[in-house]
Length: 438
Ligand code: ADP
Figure 1 (cartoon, protein in one colour):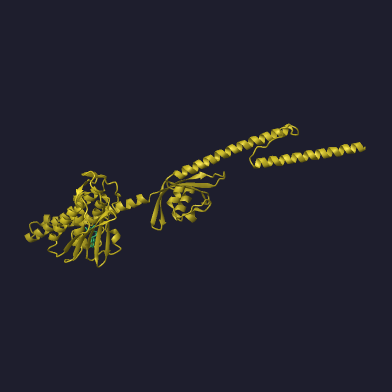
Figure 2 (figure 1 turned 120 degrees about the vertical axis):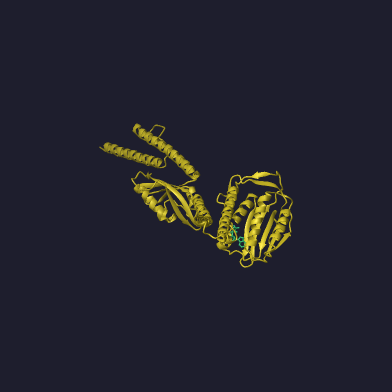
């Protein structure tokens, strides 16, 4: 009886210790699975049952498969990140509540002021009702293939061409996530509007002389018998004046178009700028004798013959001196000064005329920009002179700008790099100019 009792107690102790060992192994196995590490069976073979070994083997296979899948996934993710990062287009993915899931580097460049943080709602960083509407339209399937969107910025606007699609949710849910590709087209938009503005300006400039010519020609055709000779002469002179004006505008337009082309035909030759300025001063002194303008030449710096297109530079100085004469009253002073500034040859053409208001100063080199439209046309101006000046100076690798104090005068400054002629008569291409001419 006692023996039976002892046996029973021993059996219970043994069972309890087996249960404890099993529990510890299960805990260890669970910990190994959590850490994604293989679980080592008792290789001594002592206490592990075959069934336990099989269970552990299956668990270890699963751990290995999981680790392989995870390595592949993180490789794909980093590949995707590199690919998206190298794209010039902005890529954005949002969830069904417009929470940001993915945003590449190019997107941050399109919206530099916004910090695109994953999880953040897109409306808080890209504030545009048109863009939010576009995302909604994409989800409804009513969005156009490609839309152009304008985003207000501190210095104007940013234009973006957007395409997008609904994508399956990565979390396996049935939510409608959206992927968008944004391509910045601000520069193209700006060029387009400049081109439109240019065509409108040209049409406007041509319309007035053309309609005057048309009107007088019709009058002469209809009533050439009745019109007194004196009137006929006056009409013909008016037609001639307006034809000359049309000719002048077209000449300037052709010059501009040539200067803006790939081959502006600049002929760089050894040009003595000091001599050119002396000749100019003499010519203009004679020309301005009637109006009583005084022209002074101060050659503080002289340079050896430079690689330059003398004909085009003469055109530059003609335009500047014509302006100085046109826009200043008789008896005004005009001074041509030269200086060497930081290795550049600086030529200043200054007058003591009415000057140019500060608000107009940044625009006077734009095509057709005039401060006083009436005065410019009256004096035969086309509004293209300074634009031509700027192009020619830029083609010589130089800069041109205007300084003015209203009521005291205007100074146009040219700064040309001092280049000695390496290979004379070398034509220059127009690659360094922007197509807008601004
Ligand atoms: P325009 O054919 O009208 O003279 P420009 O391109 O040569 O055209 O000059 C642009 C405008 O700049 C002129 O219409 C004039 O209003 C202004 N401007 C140019 N030079 C002077 C100057 N020396 N003094 C005052 N205004 C000037």
